[in-house]
Image (tube, rainbow, N blue to C red; front, side, top):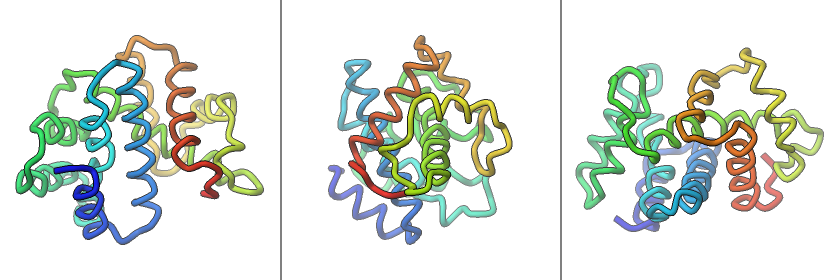
Length: 182
């Protein structure tokens, strides 16, 4: 499955524009981390793009989230490492996150949501106006609905600092969306 085919499959299953935008953000972040770790950019990007392919179908049943995604993706010619990574993003399944790709998806998924939250707090809601410092200050607020701050803290497993983790994630999103108003 190539990127265009993956995006078409995603659009068939996600009707909410915010969820599509989130998937594109995670794709951009995963690609940036693939460059950082000198890994396969296409594989990491597809993982980010497809990680929530089942989110609307499993709404209200978080235990099924990522399992249904794996079932969907098993019907396509897609690398098994992508399916495993997507399956391992859910704590319900207790799968070890063995590779950097697994760990980045787990931590960065929620960080992209926090960055979007930060953009939405700004008067113009412009992603390009979000700063690293703003994001770091909001990491200490554990009351932002829908964001699992415990997941974000797993950046430590990547052997990078919080500052590096936020910088890479934020800059990847800003590059991908180039002044998009969230």
